[in-house]
Amino acid sequence: MHYLFSVIYDRTDLATPEEMTAIDAFNDRLQAEGHWVFAGGLGAPATATVIDNRGAEPVVTDGPYVESKEHIAGFWIIEAPDLDVALKLATEASGHCNRKVEVRPFLSE
Amino acid sequence: MSDVHEAVTRAHREQWARVVASLTRRFGDLDVAEEAAAEAFATAVERWPAEGVPANPGAWLTLTANRRAIDRIRRESKRDDKQMQARLMDDDTPHEPLGAIDDERLRLIFTCCHPALATEARIALTLRLVGGLSMVEISRAFLVPEATMGQRITRAKAKIKAARIPYRVPAAEDLPARVSGVLAVLFLVFNEGYLATGPGTDPVRADLTAEAIRLARLIRALLPEDGEVAGLLALMLLTEARRPARVSRSGELVPLHEQDRGAWDRALIAEGHRLVRERLATGVAPGRYQILAAINAVHTYAREARDTDWSQIVALYDQLVSLDPSPVVALNRAIAVAELDGPEVALAAVDRLGARLAGYHALHATRAELLRRMGRSQEARAAYDAAIELAGNTAESAYLTRRRDQLG
Image 1 (tube, chains in turn cyan, orange):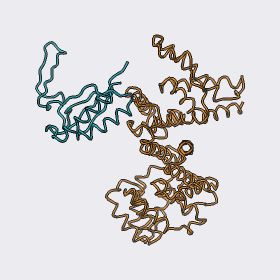
Image 2 (cartoon, helix red, strand yellow):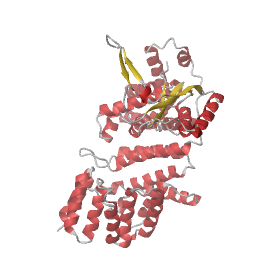
Image 3 (cartoon, chains in turn purple, blue):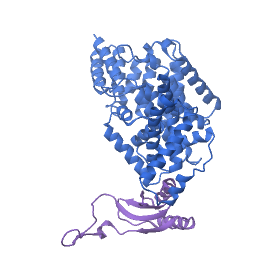
Image 4 (cartoon, rainbow over the protein chains, first blue to last red):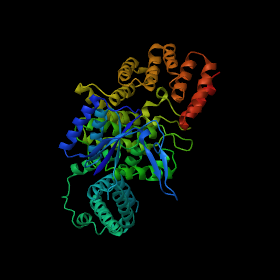
């Protein structure tokens, strides 16, 4: 079962060297234990572009789809047998990257 | 006929959670388990009067529910799913001894009380799936429309399924943290029963207090070494013991010092005291529920209200304040201080809490009683008015209104 860990942050500064070291070590462990699927950091909300092509013409808008204090600064996609395992990993992830983490399951079936 | 009716009622009380738990384990789906269990009980109501009550109602109900679940899954055309098909064909799980089945119920309780679910959803699911209460009963107890409660339960079940909240007792290292969530749910259910809110409700809901105690006993049997489980059970028993004396014939709340102590349930008190003594004997530092139980033990030891050992109660509150420095605990400590050091000292302490507890009826009720004892009738009347306005329990409002009207 796959889970998305969204890293929630309210500023746009990047991870500090200490945070990066902690994140790297955590990623190594995820890989060694078979939880790793994918992870990445994202550019600041200001770097986002939204496309809406549901109408006659595609509309391109500068900026994120929603303006809010908090945004998604990065993410992990992990493999875990159930929510308890995912929550345990997310707890560690939040500690290592020093930001809030939202856990959501991918739709299965 | 009434024997059969009683047998069905008893089976529902004793077997509902077991049937739901065993089907949840087999089919891995709370909806299937719950609906099949409900159908099995409906079948029992239909058939037992004619066919007689089976020798082993639990086994009969589980078997019937299993068949209903299989019918349901077949109807929902999951025929292609080989795994499901295999599960339908042969249930190779050996017949479990009683202990293992109780463990199934514990799994069910921990699933319903998972920390990833909102507190209201935990309460609703526990009452529905473990307690077997109907949606009408649960929504009435918590004063929300049935549709709201139904949505809450549906959403919680959907999250359990989609996010794959496991159906298991947490690992040993997670257990203490998870048990405290379960105990919090049981305590909320108990309190709602003991001081039911709402103008149209009975002031005391004995069905809810009984259900909370039944579930606490179950957890106690499964986790006999856990001090807080024992503490909460003792606290509920000692509180429940006073229920017969707590509301007067005219529907008015009777405060502790005016209660007819002869009407208290001696058996429940003895059991509660036994648990408190047992915890004291371990020498392990008590948690919140154990201290609250000890306070209630001191109250129930006293033969007359005036024999109450208030210094011991204040000492216990001091211990509680160090664990839980909340304003509500401080308020209760102040009530005990009034008996020991007089109303002036207590009022000063209560007034310091005023800002944080301005919306809490008990703060105003306490102030009213203290001011009354000090002869400050005018201020007491205003405090009673504020308390009556905020009180949600009909018996409590009636009591406060009479006290206010007695003021000269």
